[in-house]
Image (cartoon, rainbow, N blue to C red; front, side):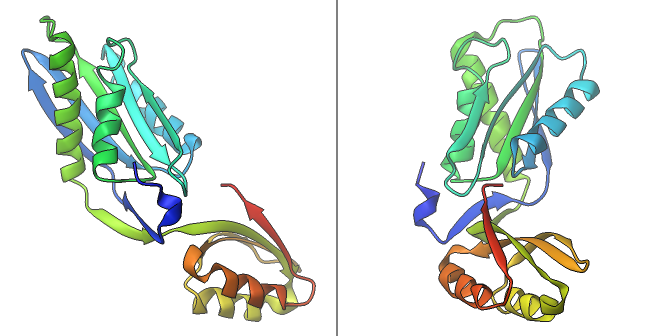
Length: 206
């Protein structure tokens, strides 16, 4: 896995995708989702468990965050290393960040063995990742801005000029804006924002 924090861009998916793979009666259904937090992931996993209550396994892997260090794999009852790791391996082979893949398995009555399982989870993940466009995005650092409404035009001008991503905003007499600032423009943007009277800038993790 390349250390994404040394880069200015990263690769991810923008849209969910679904693919299916069958082997000796067992059915594997892979779901790909764009995520930015564990909360995002948990919502998708809970929804799939409701949608597929009779499936034997709901295995998964995800990786997210600026440095790509937030990741998890889960075999959900399959032999250790036969499901979650192969799924993550396919995510990492494409150097993707902010991506989760959940594979739902319906057992077909024939044991596939560890090599067969590794192949099945790897194959269905590959198929699903081929069905969703991979996009390049700028690596951003998250900040929260607290300022007086009288400075709103100046703030919005700066964020627009430097293509910052506004994630949340509360525009009242006292304003709060949560935004992402591209790493390669970070110093310039912070310099300009700090020049605004009464501006409070807080770095956020997520």
